[in-house]
Length: 129
View 1 (cartoon, rainbow, N blue to C red):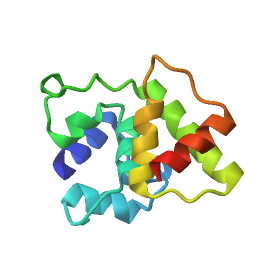
View 2: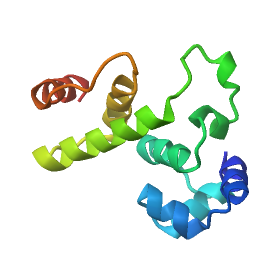
View 3: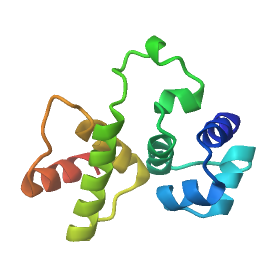
């Protein structure tokens, strides 16, 4: 995965600093991802990295997205979903685990439904915790 992240970053002409700033991590963190020395990358940071690099997350994993039974990722919708979650967490001072964030992102990235109201979102967050 690290080699694919690095190749995509270089193909786009991005520096480590640029990717790090967009994802919200340090330059060292991105470097560790690329060299495979980071033990884990959170689901949230992984999805943000795929947005910054303008690619489907399955590409970074080395999975042929046509072989996966999930519809392809709408990058624009995913970016809106991340922003929605960040706003909710900040506004309501909510703590979400990376797994809960990933579940909420998956729910919100469904293009066929609109984003929930604040009250509905808070109920959903309680359900996925």
